[in-house]
Image (cartoon, rainbow, N blue to C red; front, side, top):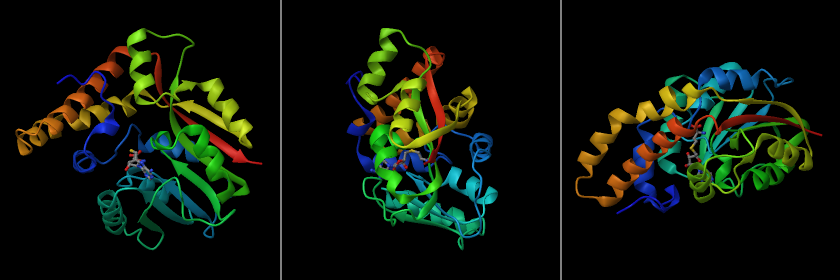
Length: 257
Ligand code: SAH
């Protein structure tokens, strides 16, 4: 069966969770870029309330927690990720300040203006950037921040193959100026934007998957969906290698006004 028209969303959710829970991160990123993005945020105190939406198993959340005061709530749709998240918090002795809860980013469990900071790495695409920044805004205090990574085009034009892939995977991918305008229209000042370095995708994400892939296929021997999931990840890695000058993730840091 060809994967050409298959989106990641069509795979069995339990298989996806099992595959990605073997990784420290479920998307491209790196501790140093998390810390760099955090350097644009000021005013956090022990009283601050932070949410990490689509936190996965918490790779970036634990880095955040080690570099900020305040309490952090991680939200993810999948219980398995949240279980690992809370284990990871306890292993680092952060359980007093960092708590994972299962929930949807479409309905986040906070009060109006409760949060000083919303963080979301490699996850806002699940709701869509524009919808996410607009809907989450009411939970952020005036003067508070939103920090997200989002798939972005680096050029105005690009080869058909990569354009077609992204139109299927995430039609909202757009250029950085378009995303900044969306952030501004939603009522934020764009404080900073920067592109994640290549190693966030390669060494830190695709390369980490290689040793897991054969084991995963062997464990699910005969399961076409498991084979297709691995094939899809390999195809994604190859596309990145071929077309990385045209797209990537950018960090968008906005301040609510
Ligand atoms: N922030 C993590 C995980 C990114 S992968 C990291 O950078 O490593 C995207 C995450 O979004 C996954 O953990 C997935 O379970 C979660 N997710 C997908 N749809 C969601 C939804 N509707 N609500 C909350 N989380 C969701």
